[in-house]
Image 1: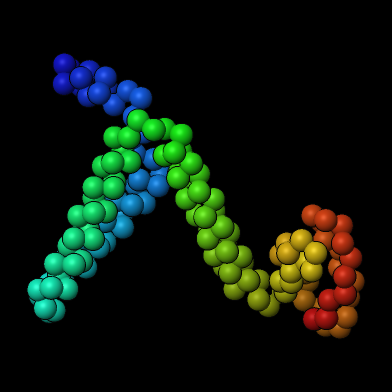
Image 2: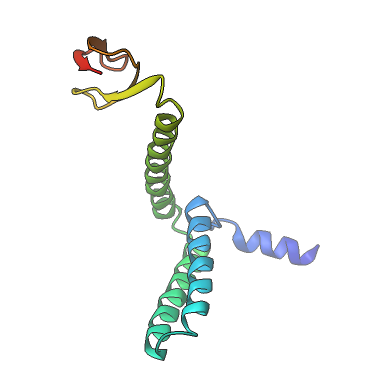
Length: 140
């Protein structure tokens, strides 16, 4: 119990592990496994360079976790979350395109670039974007 209380008081005001930190840790583990496998087949200098990069990544992970500059660490995490949400949305749309390939077609609004899901009816049609209200012609 004393150790737990000391650890809590030590981490008070520090960043800890956020989502970006966990992502970096997963990258660290993947690189560590890859380096272990690669070290069997390549020259020692390549293995040394890769292990040096892995060590620098480990130092950065601990630096972020123990940092007291919460504003900068939260800004880094926010940028990561913003990027990750864009990647997740892209793959979500790709999954939906595959799922709906027989019944729907996906088109972008020329004004706001929103992806619209339209019924797959042959010919030229007029579509309205629900986000910006722009009407445009679509040929399916």
